[in-house]
Amino acid sequence: MKNPGSGQRGTPDFLLLIMTLLLVGFGLVMVFSASSSMTVVSKKFGYDALYFTKRQIMWAGLGTLAMLVLMNIPYERYKKWFAPFLLFTVILLIIVPFSKGINGASSWLLIGGMGVQPTEFAKLAVILYLAAIITKKQEKFREFKRGLLPVMIVVGFIAGLIMLQPDLGSCAILVMCATAVLIAGGANLKQLLLTACAVTGVGALGFSLYLLAHPDFDGGYRMARFTAFIDPFSDPENYGLQLLRSLEAFGHGGLTGTGLGNSVQKLFYLPYAYNDFIFAVIAEELGFIGTTLFILFFLLFLLRALVVSLRCPDPYGTLVGVGLVSLIGIQALINMGGVSGAIPITGVTLPFISYGGSSLLSLMMGMGILLSISREYNRSGRSSQRTRETERRSGR
Image 1 (cartoon, rainbow, N blue to C red):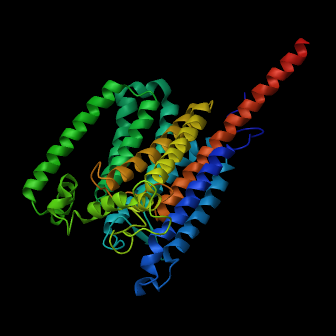
Image 2: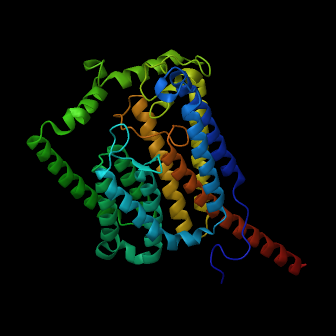
C-alpha cells in the first residue's frame, strides 16, 4: 500500500489558493491606504508613500514563493521535519528576551537588517509538532502520562518563552490553537480540562503574588490597558486613546464608508493604523456593508480550508489543517475583537491583512502545507474515481 503523498499527486485546491492570494492582495491595498498618508509627510520614512507597502510586497513575494514550494512537497515529509523546525524556533525564542528588539518591543530579532518575530513561526511549529506526536502515539495519546502530559509540557514551555517577551496575545493564540489540535486529535477532555484548570489556577496565583510584590510591574502598562478596555474614557489621552480612535473610525464609516483611501483616523490620529488597527481603517473606508462582506469572505476562506482539512484521508494531514484553520481564525477573532472593543487589545495582527512580514510569511507557509494536503485528497479522489470507472466497465 502506498503512503500518502507517494505516487502521482493530485492538483492543489485552486479555490483555496485563489482565496489566499485575494486576501493577501486586499491586505496590500489596505496597508497602502492606511500608511501612505503618514509616510509621505514623514522624514523618518523618507517621505515615501510606499514605505510600508514596498516592504509588505517584498514579504508577500517571499510568502508566495514559500507557499508554492511547500505546496509541491508531499506533506508527509513535514512529519519528519517538525523536530528541527521546532528546535530552531525554540532557540530563537530563548534569544529574543536578550535582544534589543524594535521600537522597544523585545519580541523581535534583527536578522540581516530585517525584523523577524520568532513567535509567528513558533505557532506553525507547534501545530506540526502536535499533529506528528498525536498520529504517532495514536491510542496511547489518550493516556495521561505517556500522551497528554508530555505534549502539554512542551507547549507550556514554549508559551512560557513567549510570555517572557512578554506577548500575552500570541501566547493566548498558541495555547488556544494547541487546545484545538489536542481536542481534534482525540485527547481525553476530562484530563485536558482538569489540567488546564490546574495550570490556569497556579499561573493566576503566581502572577497575582508577583503583582503584589511588584505593583509597578511593566510600569502598570498592561493593567492600565485592561482598565482602558473596560472604560476607555477614564484615560482618553493615554491608554484609552487607541480604542477610542478605533471606535471613532467605526462610527465615521457608517453604512457605506468614506471610500477607499479616505479614512480620517489614519491621519496621525489612530496609532499603528497599518498594523494592529487596520481593521478599523477597513471599517471606516468601506463601512458596515464593506466590512460585513470582508468578514463573510474571511469566513468562507476558513470554511474552505476546514473542508480541505477534513477531506484528507490521513489523520496527520487533517490535524495539521485543523491547527492552521484554528490559528488563522482565532488570531482574526482576537484582532477584530480588540479593535472593536469587544475584548482587551492584545496587539496581534489581522491575518494576511495587517502590515507584518513575519506574520504574513508564516501564514503563507502554513497555506502552502495546507495546499499540499489538498493535493493528497485530490489524488485519492481521482484514484477512487478511476477505480469505480474500472469496476463499472468490468461489470459491463
